[in-house]
Amino acid sequence: MSFNLLLIQLVLFSCMFSLLRRPRLPQGWVMVSSGILAVLAVSFLLVPDLAGWISGGAWGVLVLTPLLGFTQVNRLFYQERYRPARRLALCLRWLHPADGWWEYPEILYGLELGQQGRMDEAATILNHYGTSSKPTGRIATALLYRLGARWDELLNWTRQNWAEELVVQDPVMGLYYLRSLGEIGDLNGLIQGLEKFEHRLEKSNDGISLNLARMIAFAFAGQPDQVRQLFHTSSLKIYSREIRHFWLATAELAAGHESAREQLQVLQHHSDPATQNAIRWRLSHPLPNPHRELTPLSRQILTQLETTIQQETRYGGQMTLTSQKPYATYALIAINLIVFGFEMALGGSENQETLYRMGALVPEDVLAGDWWRLITATFLHYGFVHLLANMLGLYILGGFVERILGVPKFLLCYFFSGIGSMVGITILGILANVPDLLGVGASGAIMGILGVMAAILLKGWRREKAKIAAKRLRLVLLIVVLQVVSDIFTPQVSLVGHTTGLVLGFLSGVVLFQVNPLEQVKSNRVS
Image 1 (cartoon, rainbow, N blue to C red):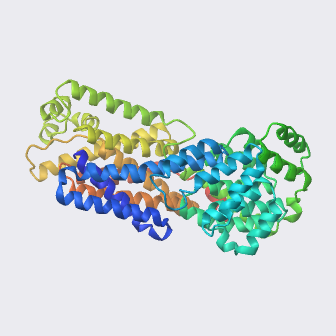
Image 2 (cartoon, helix red, strand yellow; image 1 turned 30 degrees about the horizontal axis):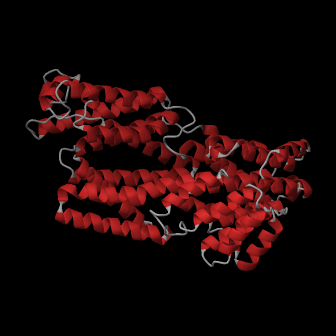
């Protein structure tokens, strides 16, 4: 596969996937995706050999860069690091001025001023944008109330202008609405409102907002262990020590531990003005006793939420960001890179004679006794693009499977799928009498890892009723469909090898992955 063809497929699949999500996607991104598809179509008609480079360049500048950048801006926003967030947003808004991003740096500047104690200047900026009817205006007004810890005013303003069903549609507005319910002591309103908020955020894949809302609910419900778990194992790991201490102290205080007051008082002395206001409110407004206030429905929601978080820790999260380093995955990548280096040194990765000498798969030779080629061929690659695609896939998928199965079972699945795919290619080559067949690549092994992942998620969905497992399983199936389409239209790619590896990986995952019976019973009891 040439790099030009790889870029064409990347741009096509990415933009088509965005357009399929059109009802939930901001209008600006819909226009960008449509425009890039038009660029791809025109360039493919005029200069097909450069179409991937042209459309890929546009996609990189107008889609990939803003998406990665805005993700970082949001991380900085949630960390309350408003100055670097504003500076980054000032640059990014030129690449995507729609969907409220053009005004966003000014709102961040208002928050920056408030953090410095310049409340009057901050209020001037936020009030200016608060008069707008756009979503940016609503957020600016909510942030102004938040800076002063005026939670009762925020709640009244929200209720006067929007129904709860509309408020929870916006992540920022929904978060501050739920927090204000907790701050004024409406614990059941907070927890039952969270249930509606969850449905909205699960669709948008906004993990930080979702886990932040959950953490707030657990804090006001007096469950410091759950708050601590979310800060340690979820997307909330990005938060500063100061923010963690504030919410852990809140949870301890709600649980009836008065020593938490001293922790808040100490924290107040070296916090920014906005946090000082929040602590002042906390100390002057007693929190309700969760044991007396929580209704049976609220308790049930919290219990289900604990189970959901455990399932998301097991089946969800970023596949490459695991609590333990995937050393076996890294080792396999390193071996493939070293072997590729030898290919280049001994004659080139696209030189068939070099590949043959290093152990490429040749069906006739395997039947003649060179069985070892079934193994060595899985570490050879035909060209840099082939290597890059496979190692990227291994990096993304390997860590998840390695964490779930452990190193021995992970390696067993990898080699069983990889060698098995080479056996499949050998059988096909002999039966179809394909001349000059030369097979190389770790693709079969990596498709096997994808199959293992499908088996893990399928079991998680069927036995634990884990929604996150069902969601990830749909994503895996989409990847499989896209891979099959790519294989059909890409020359010199073995559909048989990929399919064999996928099936063998799935079967090995079914055999090797077992759901913990205690966890399964607990999950079914909650359901």
